[in-house]
Length: 546
Image (cartoon, rainbow, N blue to C red; front, side, top):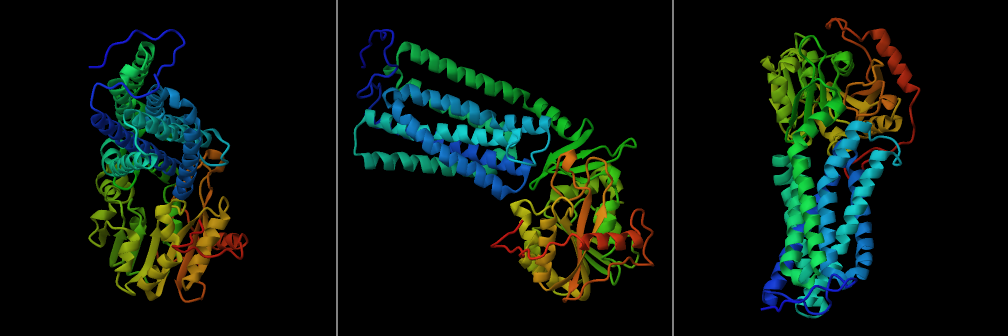
């Protein structure tokens, strides 16, 4: 038995140096420390992945967000390790405080970031704005705390039983890396799909606090002063209380934050396997808005403008067989079905949840004209790139690429030279392809990179645009932007096999259009030609340019 001792005099360090005074065997103590390392490492990696995922969802450009978060965090881990050298004389108390702080900061980071996004607006623009600075601040704080763990744990494990430094490091890092593996797998396969980002982060913080507090108070408690024990216990109880309160209020918080982002008329909000889908309006005469991952995809005030400009110039020619890549909302298919001589429409959409909503939701299905009830429409829910690799050659007269903005890693490959090469293969000899290339005015280099990439794939191109209403938010596949920077136009590229440009016209025998006329189409084609940026290189899978 460990003999009891009198309370330390005032001013004494909270940790008594020398061998740890344990009530268990040293081998058991080492195992418990390594188990704590395992749990804390898993929690630390969840915090990293949560920051990357949330930043990519809210900001876009996932490669940039992952690079910034991880590089800042690794840099901060080095600083944290250096800072922890001064705390080795108080290793137990310091490690307990570090884990309590990490649980609080990491557990609350997702809610804090989403709150700033919801109530301050867009994340676009310079890196000096508030939300992006907060992202970097969280990455820095979490990295500092994670970096401080290893030196303190090394000191603790050596006080249980001395061993050579190489062996101690090997044991410590083995537990750390295995824990990171478990945390890395738990985030996408358990926490994110079943709990969501906010609740998942809060639960991770609670596990982190319990593991760190139990390890120090249960194993090294006799080596702490009474005051240090009470302070550490109070800190952990306070952290758990904050996390538990946040978990209780998380549903109300999400509802209020969603209303701040989308307005008070949110009718449907679901997280599919691919993205968050939000519907507002669509009943009682109110215009329907569809948001995908926070981006206005379909706007009732702009209804028909984007789809008419996307679909009808490509339909000026043979159009019996039509392929729609993306377009799970059914609006592109609706425009295609306005031509009675269309025999078959194949829609390839990776998000089965969006297709299901487009079929069943009264507002959205009415807006798409119940396109999915038409027997000519055939839907495949599969990755677009993978589907094209096995698609039949020269099978379609028209291919309509109604795809997400190329700003995220997942969609960049859908704007690559390889993708357009696969698309060219499925076009009939006189077939036509149309691609949305982003706003010409706001991001001209992205638009002309799309056009250059299509030409590099052996397609003859004709660029044009369509203007959206100046309503403060323009629907379409472009990333969300603040009202002052909202794209007021959509850029398109019409293409065909071979180097020749495609005539930009409408089918004179086609349906009557509400917003698009031959005169406006010709004028917009001339306007886009004047913005051309020469010398931009094409985008490929191994060298993306967006």
